[in-house]
Image (cartoon, rainbow over all chains, first blue to last red):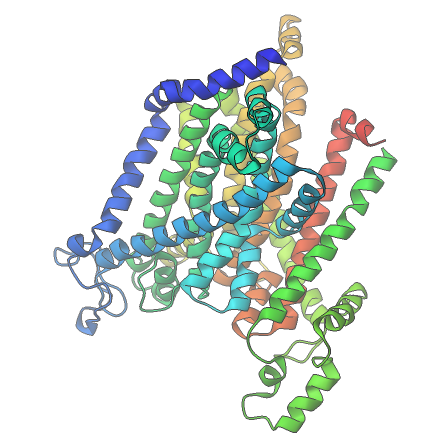
Length: 291
Length: 309
């Protein structure tokens, strides 16, 4: 028992002393994921500066043109520049991803923290609810919620967020339970720290590893789900440039011009791939056993 | 073992009960008056009132729930607003197409995923393993809907090999939807098989088998794989959830007449009794598959079952 505590504590210190960072620096998946994701985030942030055209301005004379010098990625059925739409679309997709995961992390994390820290009937109730939410595949749950709330990007965020709540509740709960019994936590309690202080000063910092990994992987999943809902017409509404919605409206034209389908899809694949690589790299770094 | 199976089976009841509450309350929170949806915007108030009375929409929510759930328990999901047919008939008619698609996609995923995972684990970090890793990572990042559209462009528009949509009599109709649906499952199963095989190969009994002079193939397939498959069985169960989600999108793209496309069509038409029915069927199917996985687990790993008896 004593040795495992020391091991765990030194793992925490190793994190701050940089051993985890050293592992991250040497992990090609983490590096590639970070670089690619960085480029995507920058191009979304600077979309207004980078875009050659207005993403929603229609120009029916130039509709469904192939890639050319004027329109590097071609134009869609309304003659809108695809490159500009994809750059702006990144803003929507990343925003939806981040906000829905933030919602899931805040509410799921709080539930998991309460369940893991206090245990007892509170734990039983919270876990029963999360079991029920997990009984529906996440995308179906999100789809059902959006169907009820009505289509729209905000509702997609809420729906995808809610469908991720039980995942975070479970991860945070098990992380909390694994550190709750450790000596430094008991010491803090014995020293008279209040519950809130113990939770936020001692327990959360020590269970941060698995949570960060899950945030990254959930971001990838959230972006995929949101794009899927938009593809089904339940998410972003025209003329908002959003990758899934772009594919939805391009569907009818796939026979004439493949690029209206190709580019938005590649944008999603690259983003999700970068996040998955990043998450995998982080997992390897936080969990030395997997080396 | 019997006790374990019984206990595990009974656990479905509270979960399905909870799911039914969620499905019911989602629909209850939906803005819009179901009576108006059925009769149209300009229906006279008297008719609307009559239909509300007949469907019990004037009752308080908890009475409505009890009425609804006792119907569901007898497989009565109400009537479709669009077709006015019983929801259960609509589902029965379209369920076989979805089962077909899901089973074929699972078989495909197992048939490709397990051998790829085993070969990767036998030569870790070789060129072949690296190609497999890059490929599976990419496969996991491809959205189902985009893959479906791209495969239609490549195999039906450009090459003209396969029909783009529909579910005809010939096998050609099955290729694109099954591959589209199975792709992410192939990748997950391959990755899970690789990592558990890597763990198992290091264990003592595998070393013993090798030192007895058994051939490499014999050790891998006779000893290591059997034990490495335990987590793979779990992944197949979990995959079934994303398979159901994927089926909703795949069926919509390929105009496949299953309950996934029925759900999407009904959502667009605000035909909520059908949506409720399909979501419940999906949840039930997911629960059953996970039950079967847990039971299989009990047989494969008797230690688990003894913990329950």
